Length: 308
Length: 254
Image (cartoon, rainbow over all chains, first blue to last red):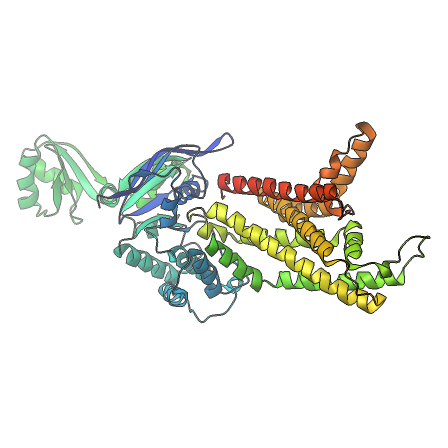
């Protein structure tokens, strides 16, 4: 994943005097699934619309495939887009909607392509019902099919699992992972952090139009994992005690003074006692546990709003 | 461009509103001729009975009578065709394609031209039926003059549809666009400006306004009048298509 295909350099979007997105910097590499996280009105949709070419940045630069996007409309046609509501004619069928778009794309083998896509997203190509009679979930699926019709390199999905039932969520998740496995790069925004955490390889946390943090899946897991953090004078002196006396097998030496213990069976009191018996002074010891939700809320300054 | 035009054409041929509008127009046009027959006024000496008008004069007469029903049908169709795509958000699916913003405007313009042409064809058919049924009159007039009249009115009506398209694109609001379309079809603005001009300046610049030109009875044998008519039509088409394309290129699709 070394091929940077989208780069945002100080991108800002102003609506009158209000900044919807401010000085956004982000690099997206081929094959990544980037989760865009933020509260309502944080600027997620505006950001995705700028990447899709639907709205123009007020300042800053967008680079696609290592080239500036300004004046190069061709880059935008390599994006499959589903932002907010799927753009569908309500009074015609799913097949007819896709057919219209296939004509616009100039696809020659329209029938086969459309049927294949509808099956891929779990819709019946023979269903002649009008789109207005579809459930929210069916519309979302059809929206994904529409986004995939032009064989894009990048798939941009804004809240794709909104309104889906649990079964639908699982199916869309599997579909996204399946598409990603074929090499498709995916940008996805969602409020459902639990769901996002199952698919994203990178997270961009956006708050009031600015990126609060961009973090990889590994970094996030590390920050949210349950562990005991021990700070001693000399970590290497503590390790034999932890291994031999307390039978701890899952640990990590972070630096010369800090050790993280991941064994769930062990208690803090046991560690302090054992180390003290072996003459090792513990400077500090604490249990670290943070949920994904807490982590994101802290970064969007909402943790204090929670009372549950 | 061709692909987007094909897409719009596919939608054009499969939307029921277009057929309904043409059917309604045809029915009301025939009904209008029936009403003319019922309420025909005795003409002064030297005047011509409506029933004796050729098709050329009949078209000139009906178009010059406010409100212009053709303009209202054109406004309704233009707003429907553009706003149905806009409100559904379907444009967002293809607008990222190369030059799609420009091509989508040209494609809409072509479809509007097609609708205007179909409306004129419907008018000719309805006039033919109505005049034959109620006045027993089938005289079309000089074919060359009829073609010039139809060509000039086609261009003027197409220009009007582009004006309504621009309004719909810029306001993005069905109600405002329809209201503006009706006000323009009634030529309220042209009449007010004309009155103000007569009152205060004494110039005749408002005769070059699009709708004033459209509803004016033309002297088709007069070259100056033809230049005026075609000049206004072509200038309006060029200016309005430029505005529409420029707006679409810069538009944020929120």
